[in-house]
Structures are given as structure tokens and as C-alpha cells.
Length: 268
Ligand SMILES: NC(=O)c1ccc[n+]([C@@H]2O[C@H](COP(=O)([O-])OP(=O)(O)OC[C@H]3O[C@@H](n4cnc5c(N)ncnc54)[C@H](OP(=O)(O)O)[C@@H]3O)[C@@H](O)[C@H]2O)c1
Image (cartoon, rainbow, N blue to C red; front, top):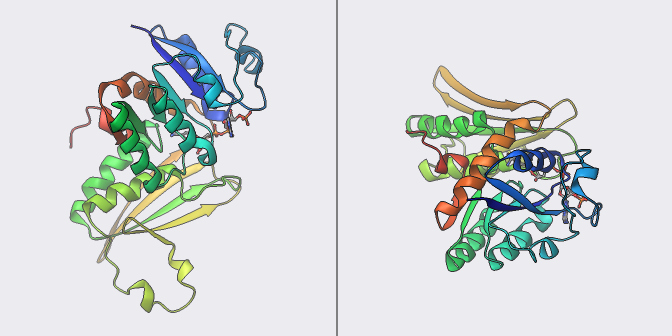
């Protein structure tokens, strides 16, 4: 059976690599693509790949007027939630790659997905090493009470913390609230210097030229520490395989799942 896919953000850094993979896959068909600046143009012309005969739409609403099985959201947090709810309303399952979607928005999305009996798979990071980081962090948190997260990205990344780090904090929060020997309200100096408390863990975001994207979780114990770090290079390829797996699996459940590992056989 061919999975009909509509891709919002088809001309973007992450979306264009995914568009090419969907186009090349025997079990998928790219039936819709969204980009404001290239609306009305052929995706193949924009991506310099003439074998892709798909006219781009300027909005998700317009693209969703053609039936699709799976809608992929790969744009910006400002428009993502609206797009996801529209896609669910149109009867599509949804894969969310866009970062910056809040826990509260995800709760609304979960309710809408359950009501429509559709699946939503939201993954802050589709790269295999990031997925493994999530699993290893969950194991470590069961044994080590103190941890903090550092979120590194390039200077132009507008959202903080990243989707990867939001997801890490969400997972840690399900296991424990990270211990704090000096409560935040008793700290001296600017409280922001201790970062933001997200789902019970301190999160520090660094946005500097020279970085691409990395997430580091530091677990500290007396006289020992464990540092787990995922680091990505400049290409979008690491995210393609995970997003393709998400597209293939999102129709197998209803409601929201967070993290690619929820559809992988990772054990632990
Ligand atoms: N989950 C993961 O593994 C993963 C991996 C990489 C990136 N990301 C996240 O994915 C998102 C996209 O990243 P990117 O680096 O690909 O960004 P990008 O290069 O800026 O691409 C954004 C895409 O979305 C479109 N877009 C932006 N605003 C839109 C709007 N209001 N309506 C319709 N289309 C819109 C853009 O086209 P127009 O400007 O022409 O509209 C473009 O096609 C970010 O949130 C990023 O953090 C996640």
C-alpha cells in the first residue's frame, strides 16, 4: 500500500532532504508540499531535482485539500500547532519534526488526535544517536538523582530549548525531579544563571556561531560523573531515516506518542 504524504516545510533544510527520500521510496507518494515563498512552483525546480512533479502550496490548508494519509510538519513553532490540528481535522496522521512545540500544545494535540482516532508522532530529533541518548538518559536517571541538561545550537536558532532537549526533560521528568542541594529561591546572584527548570530538570541553552546542534546531559554523583552527549554535523541526512520510519509507523496507533523510540524495538 502506498502512503500518501503531505510535507509542510518541503523546501527547508530538513524538509528538502526528507522530500527527496519520500520521492525515492517505493511505498510512499508525495502528494502535497508547503512553502510560502515557493507557492505555485514545482518542488523539483526548487530542489534542483526535475523528477519531482509536485506543485507547492502556500499554506497547509491549501495542501490538505488533496487527501493524504500522513502530514509531516517541518516548519516553525509559530505555525506548527495550527498545521497539526488542521491535518488531524482533515483525517491525516501527523509526524511532527518541528521543534519548540510546548508540552501544553502537545496535550491539546493528543486530545485532538484521540478524538479523530489518528496517530501523532512528535520527535524532537529523528537521528539515531539522539534517540539512543534518550534511552541512555532514562536508564541513568533511575540511578543518579542529580542531573542538568545543556542545549547547544547555532546562533540563528530562534527557539530554546530545542525540541531534542524539551523531549529529554519530559522523559527525565517522568522518572524523577532532579535533586537540588541549594533550592533556586535560596541561590545568590541572578537566578537565570541556573538556567530554566523544565519538567524538574535545569536546562541551559547555548546559542553561538560554531555550533550546529548538540545536547548534553550531565549526571553528577560525589566524586564521579556521567556525561552523555549527542552531537550532529551540518547535514540533514541523519534525520531522514528516522522521519521515514515515523511516516511508516504513525498510522499504527491513535493519540500522541513522543520520541521515535516509541515505534522502535529498542528494549530497556
Ligand atoms: N525532529 C528533527 O529531527 C529535526 C531535524 C531538523 C530540524 N528540525 C526542526 O524542524 C524545523 C524546520 O527546520 P529547518 O532547519 O528545516 O528550517 P528551514 O530550513 O527554515 O525550513 C523551514 C521550512 O518551513 C517553511 N515554512 C516556514 N514558515 C512557514 C509558514 N508559516 N507556513 C508554511 N511554511 C512555512 C519554509 O518555507 P517558506 O519560508 O518558503 O514558507 C521551509 O520550507 C525546525 O523547528 C527545526 O528545529 C527537527
